Length: 362
Ligand SMILES: Nc1ncnc2c1ncn2[C@@H]1O[C@H](COP(=O)(O)OP(=O)(O)O)[C@@H](O)[C@H]1O
Ligand SMILES: [Mg+2]
Image 1 (cartoon, helix red, strand yellow):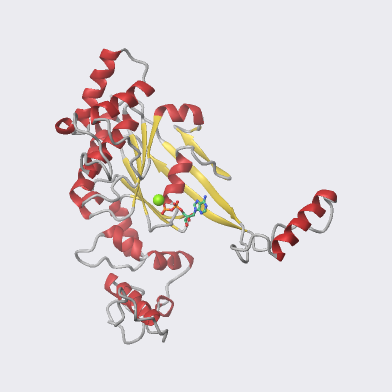
Image 2: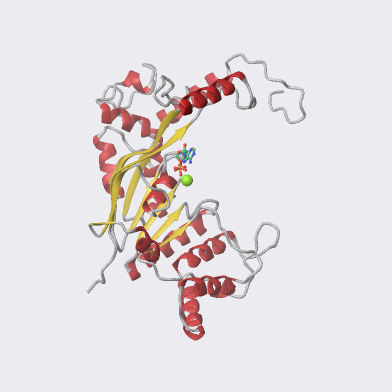
């Protein structure tokens, strides 16, 4: 029988940031600043005065808007989307590092208890934060000592089995290293970072872009290792990923497509393909579905608001005719569209300086 896992559900998560615009950020003591100070002083003296408004230009930005998602035990949920979509913010909200302004997070249908959740979860950040000089085994032992209250003999058994699980036996005695001290490879270092956060055998593992900066083989090995962790230990694994390769996509149990802080899709890769087809978006041959979905985000958003008109997508009548008129278009057409925009941006008649040694426009 399968042991009890952790199902995580987020309902209606809103996360917003408050930003303040200053007209001239380099002038600290300019007139506007003095006016703001005067307003603040006046408000302190007379709170009911007419200066109740926040500073002009101040605004609220929704980083996440009504996000609903569900991650199940024994599975990997991958959060995909372009840079700035809100992937890291969503992970931090799920991990309890940020608190959403509205919405709730449930663990096995009960509201999350942050202190308890920290004990049963691990969070791996995007950048490796490891000491360069200790060896792999020393690094993991250090983490085990901090997280587990076990006698030395049991600690070392736990570390040995973890090193095996991470596939790091051949570098166990090698220094971790960094940019200055040569050590283990980038993929191995990422495994050590994951090991540091799974040494206490958490039920939930959250990873922010675990494959960023790695070559495709190392990236595949990392995701494959995470899949084994999910399938053999019943862990709930939630990760964000920017541009997963085709073989990586096949390892995900479920995918959440995020754009501008909103969820556009959650389900299996096959469901994503079917949804895109229903929208009239035909996946071209030899194109990765996630890449295609990310490229088509604008079209998906427009489809959700209402039926897409070809003119709205910016295709001219002289564009290749496949699918036009039915709302269907290919990735090539999307690329063509962005190419036209790029060319227009370059040919705006700006006289770029050409006298510098590194000037490309000669
Ligand atoms: N504390 C913050 N201050 C300013 N901007 C923020 C803050 N947190 C998030 N953002 C903005 O919210 C957006 C989403 O950020 P993030 O979650 O890091 O995106 P992703 O991980 O998908 O690249 C970005 O545009 C980012 O600049
Ligand atoms: Mg990020």
